[in-house]
Length: 302
Image (cartoon, rainbow, N blue to C red):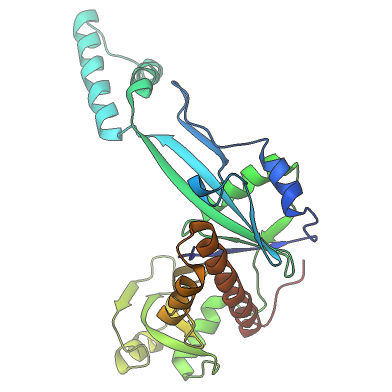
């Protein structure tokens, strides 16, 4: 169980529910398949999947949860093709133009016809609550998907006061400064990927991969006024990641040694292996996130 992305949220008050109490709450919104005429469903799934029954998995001061999202696949191209054909047939038969409101009604009818026969796509989104640090950490590259999980959790619990991570030093300004002056703190190392943007609304965008970020080419873009809005970094040779202007962490990478240690201690049993991987990952992420927050001057007071 290794997160590949990270959206960080701060709980406004300590999360008091025990793992057992949280499981009981989540039972109120279990995952389920889409009904015949449903476009999508959201619900809670055991983090261990078919290997577990509990809707939570607790290790030390961290509690893992998993949201299952099922959605009917209705390709826009197919819908529009049927809509065009049906409107053409109606206009030919009636000898008049179909109005905009009628077009909407016809489209709704087509969607209702297609829903019972549509394929279903399933997406699992994992997250865990770090009770000691009052964090909710969500494995998602998309802020929208993370917000879906938060909405479901709020609906399930009744309330959940939290906010996205905000820091005192603006990430764009800090990342730009790191490359301009080559003064990244010792715990962090520059990677080989970045995205630069001009400060104006219609400013140019430069995306670099496998590039020396401290070289003359990047320096020229910075001198021309571009700012760093995304860059790859490494923390203590333990966590590799791409940092965005919104403080989202993408393409997380953990060293092979850590993953190999987890595999050796986890054995063949899925639950035990999950337990060990979760313990090692949450420990590394706790140290890393605290270091990252300090790097940006601490959390903005609410």
